[in-house]
Length: 282
Ligand code: G1P
Image 1 (cartoon, helix red, strand yellow):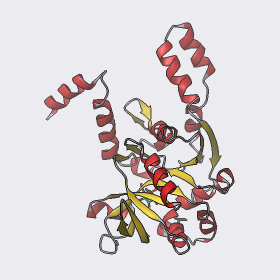
Image 2: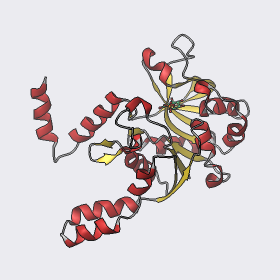
Image 3: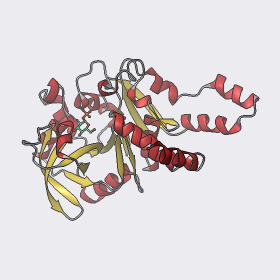
């Protein structure tokens, strides 16, 4: 299976930090956000990854490229540990890039992947969302896809006040999954058909492209993936899955802080000092 990582959005919610750098490059502890996302795809067994970028996103391409000058400087000064780290990044997977020319929404960004994907099912991982899980969230969805042979969307229960930030599904529980009856992009809490929010991990069947090509602009006057999924649902069963693990939306400041702290607390190098610091802070 191939993976598509949309990373073309403006990062408005994280201004001014994202004025001159992509939100996907915001560091979480010691790595940029998008590296966690690529690592999730790789840990799920995926080798071919398309990252959809836009203007002002060149730092993402640079991050996954070789940096020969830096490599030789590190080699000459005997900094082997750092050398290995940066060479490993460029060897992570076969990473391809395409630019979305105009910001017309998530659905339009995914449509840019049509030729790359070909006629197979593919995974989508939003570039500003980190998940922690074992197996990784994307692998959990791929396993469900193998079983159901249909589109699968990872969801999570969201608090009522957060509902207007998400695509919300309405589904009927069947074993470990929900069969989806309806999807609404960013409804008000009163209109929401449930509290199950779409978290930014999908396995999609290629028929989604037919719907992305003709769906009308929706919420925010953008081409919404959620609206195309609603059309897809009229022709084939689609499923939602409450994935096992944790998710951080790096586009929000609190989630970004939490993710850095929690990942750092799992790191032996600074865990003890950080714990001590946090205890004394409050
Ligand atoms: C997108 C999707 C939405 C989903 C969300 C998860 O919205 O359109 O359905 O719930 O990602 O982060 P965005 O956050 O890009 O506005």
